[in-house]
Length: 185
Image (cartoon, rainbow, N blue to C red; front, top):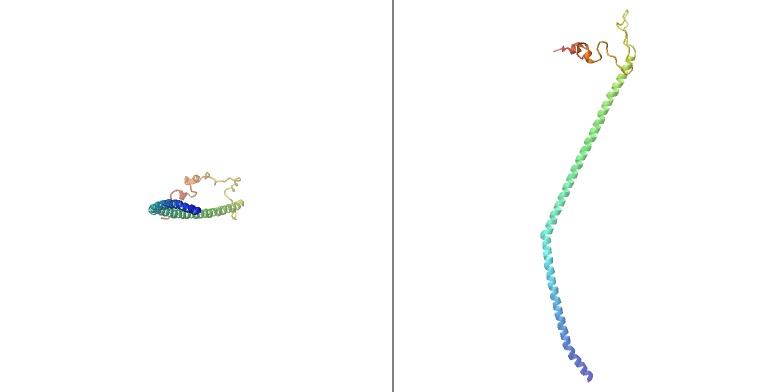
């Protein structure tokens, strides 16, 4: 029975301790639940504030920034397209001018060649002596003038070598043209 008494004694001592332990655990549990509930309310309040801030301030600002960036991109594309068109136009004009310059140069080269060929032909004709008429008893009034040396030119006798040296100082070998005489009306 001694053992029985020990068991009852233990039970009588343990029951108030167990109740005290359960009450302490219950108080601690309620305190933890209240703390977590308050923390949840604080987090929800802060999250609501952040959502409102983002919806009313950040999202509109971001939308405006995106619109500005899109407008800048469109402006950049338009400016780039305009610059490309201008450069292409300028390059085409340059090519046209280059082509015109080449054709003008060719046009100037052809007359130069023609002039050189004509001068060579005339020089060849002049290398033969003058053709004397086959008239009995005809003799030239003056002997043929000698040819000038290489690179030199000979002026007709009495004309002084310059256009103003023509008779009457008119600049024309034909006296009627330099004297103001007009033909016709």
